[in-house]
Length: 131
Image 1 (cartoon, helix red, strand yellow):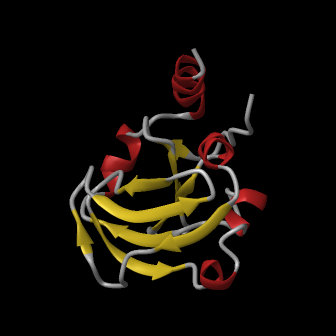
Image 2 (tube, rainbow, N blue to C red; image 1 turned 180 degrees about the horizontal axis):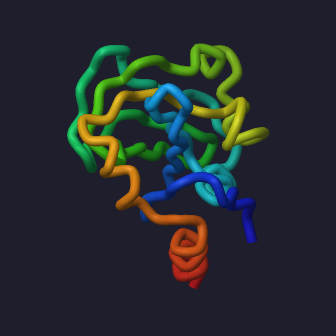
């Protein structure tokens, strides 16, 4: 079983979202997702100020095994990207919930965050995914 922090929200496509004190949100992929991908070698992050609808592909992660799309969990505008991933994409493997975050965004509707999966619901998704 992978690490699933209680203070985050999740998607069925294995992204995590954290609400920040300034009202913005930070997104990354889960420990389970990075484990399935294997060694990450490149990340194509979105451009700052880009707008994305909920469910829209916004980022691509390439590993030695495969390329995987990352989807915007709730509609929003990209505020910042993790520039460290340009030279060290393996941060996502090493620390997916902290140093390996992908980007920060401002949501169109902050209440949409509450509709994402909590840790218990995501645990059930991960367990179903394993079978």
